[in-house]
Image (cartoon, rainbow, N blue to C red; front, side, top):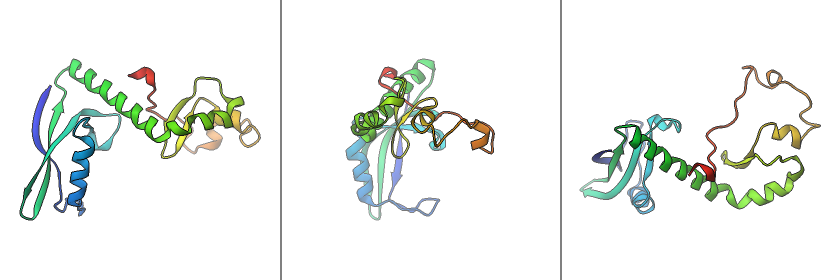
Length: 167
């Protein structure tokens, strides 16, 4: 595993004309120094390249920088280790945001469940399963084909959905 030391972010104006408050750097350090954060290519959750571990804040007059260690995979064993940590982190995030609602959702739509549904966080807690909406709302979603719902002619199930078995 390659380890690099550098600046994760600062309170200077970015190339996109955005500026973080110095307190946001402190919050990032406080929340993630122990577990770190996954590092993906251009925020693409399917393209993990490494892991960030914030280690401190470098202060100088007029500028604060969040410093970190960047772990970059160098071989397939490193990639597999990072992927396992990433799956565990995503599972924890789904549980934190949607786990409290799972029992209530399963109770509300119980008769439509087959048992293979997975908890997901799609900006609101959800259960995801093949044809689940059709089973829950048979009158609203009668025997329409996928092409009748989508101008693109095909849908794909939301992914990634990480479950406890992926740990």
